[in-house]
Length: 251
Image (cartoon, rainbow, N blue to C red; front, side, top):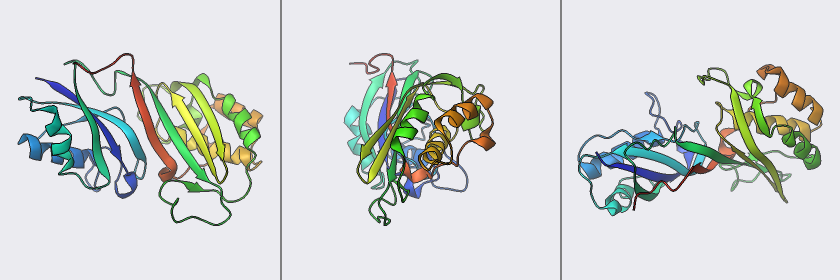
């Protein structure tokens, strides 16, 4: 059967995350429902990963199979007609029959936004974590550098994580100072449950002088979650990009 891959953007505020679950609306559920209305049959989509409740995405990849191939526009314009305003299919392409959105992914880029204004901002409340007061960005940058490379990130995973191994490779942890906003970009081969949000929470502890860069490196080596910082709120996190070894589109 032909296999297609969607690029999906969504505001995760109103959803219990990507993955279908019994007691909450999810992005996957909305996508599958819209596809079923276009195709005329139920369909299961397989994503490049899971995002938690409240987390956003610009470049979530998800593949699915169809028995009869419609014009590709049907899977974008057609599907978008049945999606709520906070979810959209940005692109669709034909991919190899053995392509897998999750297992073939070579890396992901997540962006976390901190809003540092003295007064909370209603316009930032759904896309940023309000951290009032000064942060030592230089110390945070030094601490972030210690996380780059291949490490055991057990200290930065949430309980209940089902990953077979806690070893991951981070290619970059970059802090971008934009006045009232501090952006933290994290690029890596893959991520554990809540890993980026725990990294951000720990870096904020460094910025507040509650941890030092050296202590963060020690926490990483310890593998003990209880020693790391808090889990940053979900709304500040966005999946920016998922990339693959080569162009996945079949032309």
